[in-house]
Image (cartoon, rainbow, N blue to C red):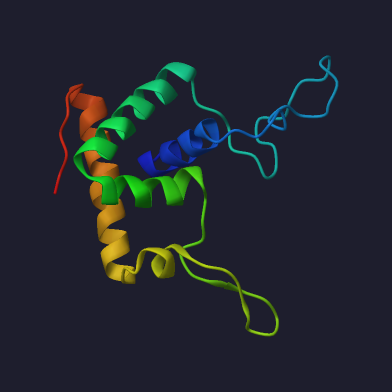
Length: 128
């Protein structure tokens, strides 16, 4: 499993859904391994550890934190979303933060690598 997928799982864990995270099936029925449209959850221990590292990221590099949260917790699109009339219906991350595509993907790679290092070394390691 890639670390990017772990970040996606953390984003679902970190975003409150007001009780909608529970399936509407009976408790007696086993859940399928992969529910369409849902991400398999990670353990609370791992999610809390990632959350601790994300809090460190916020203190050290707020720009990385904002992009990371917009991508994984808020699940904003990278590019503007348009309707069939080509009218922008939702601003993408690139326009909201005023960054280029290359710069955005470079910053996300730095954020993910920094988190991976913090988790593996159990200390604050932020790449700049």
